[in-house]
Image (cartoon, rainbow, N blue to C red; front, side, top):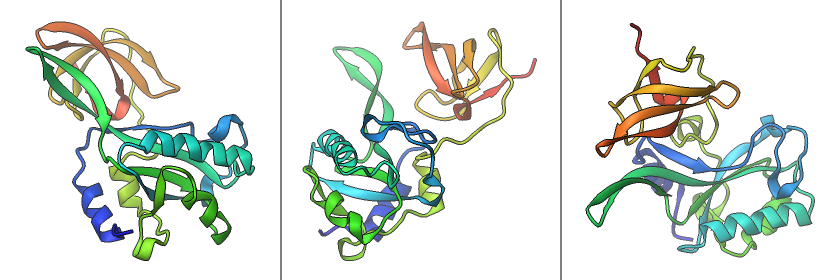
Length: 212
């Protein structure tokens, strides 16, 4: 595989800060459809290269492998990196999600040589990203930049509060909180978008409360 760690780091660093992810739950996780206790503190994040357009296939197939071989205590999360962008079609603008890093998925696992064939022989996956295709864990900075793990933010919000969006395609927009979900760290905010008011779900890390 021609990709190496340096190429990936360059691509990771160039991603917009509004990147989102398609992922499972970290903690009591359910990769492969079976919930098991969290043992992921020893786990590291790794990047896998996929065939073009096979990101979802690779993710689904790897989840099947996890279930088939009972790897729920070794492979904890599988992510397709996504981002929100504004697209214009037929004169109308809308907010859509797209893959921010085509041909890549991220996997949180406790790696060992015994997992090599299970992962690399999964349909849709061409191999690990690293020197000579060997696994090389992502750095903490890469994990942070790509928002692979949720950051807990303490912010007191309630319906009616005014907030400013500080991250993502709506950065700089002022909105009004409609509802708050403290457990998930998400708030529904009414913002003016494309000439009309619309509700959007925002992570606590994407906004700041405007004190009045």
